Image 1 (cartoon, rainbow, N blue to C red):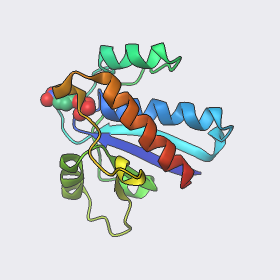
Image 2: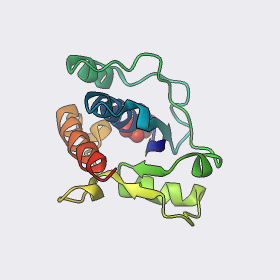
Image 3: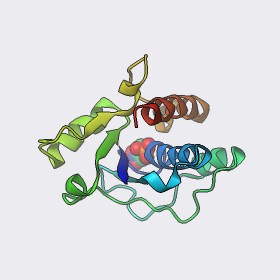
Image 4: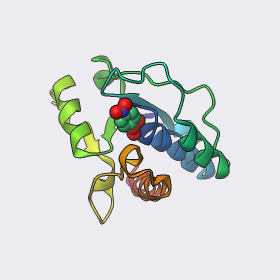
Length: 147
Ligand code: 4NP
């Protein structure tokens, strides 16, 4: 069982989008049993809040359900629990390194799995949820190919 934790600042936009896109991809690939997939925040800002409504709506428009997910914060126990801890941008990577020493090289940036390494577009600032959707799909597809 491969355990993957997606991480962003608030755990209401990018990392839950990655969590549910990745769950959908592994399901469609018939590989659901191989993975445990979750997401978490570096900040305490949104803890307990549901997926940001425009993100939930976008996921639903692609037939992906995220009902019941609420934001949770990273914990020190996550490093031992997960095989891969995947941030969305450089800022997430810096924050994650404050939580973890990364002695086992588990901390990765999603788009570094692609041929075009970059930060996932942050819709909190761009308001362009479609761009974030495209980045995350490309990143998750590339990630799944390595697993
Ligand atoms: P996320 O988006 O990190 O992709 O969940 C954000 C959510 C909340 C804030 C920023 C980004 N905020 O500043 O509260």
